[in-house]
Amino acid sequence: MRILIVDDEAPARARLRRMLAPQDGIEALAEAQDGLEALACIAGFLPDVLFLDIAMPELSGIELAAALPDPAPLIVFVTAHDRYALQAFDADAVDYLTKPFDAARLRRTLQRVQARHQARLREHRSAPAAARPSQPLQQLLVPERGGTRVVRTSDIQWIETADNYVVLHTGAASPLLRRTLAALLPQLGPAFMRCHRRAAVHLPSIERVLVLDKGDCELLLRGGARVPCSRQYREAVLERL
Image (cartoon, rainbow, N blue to C red):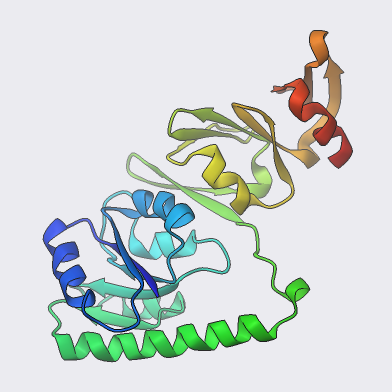
């Protein structure tokens, strides 16, 4: 199994890593110091299991669990508080570890995780390929000062890159999400596609395609936004419309 440890406290991450490292059946371990870093890491590391703290700044463990793509990694919540147990199991957590815990308790958790992981692998192998597509994200959680904005992906008209962030243009607002466009696009499904090296578009939002010089074009969206579409993407966009 591939395990990602998510905790904003470095000593807690280090202790859990030391406890997990000698256990059987663990292929790789990685760490993230908060929910935003975890989302970025998941796309590349592809964990089977998250050992997830709950009380973290900006994006809590519960909020992170709600933002995971489907099929999501298995989740074990690891926290110093017992008051989140109901929310944790509503999120289909495999287990709920209350700090501090000992090696025996961790082994029982791993037994549950491995049983669930093996059952998931059997189900995946037995299902026909057409029956197991991954489901696009329905919403994105954007941390903001004083809270978290919930952005429905169906409201996003186009996405613009900004270094290691993307701007989610909804028409009503343009929140900034710490994610790269390359990592985000596969999670949004076929309704979104890249139209420029710095932009992607929600295909149902396109009203007109305006042809420009040298083969480039602009996509006119509902509400009047104009999105660049370079010639290398123009034909693919037109085929999808």
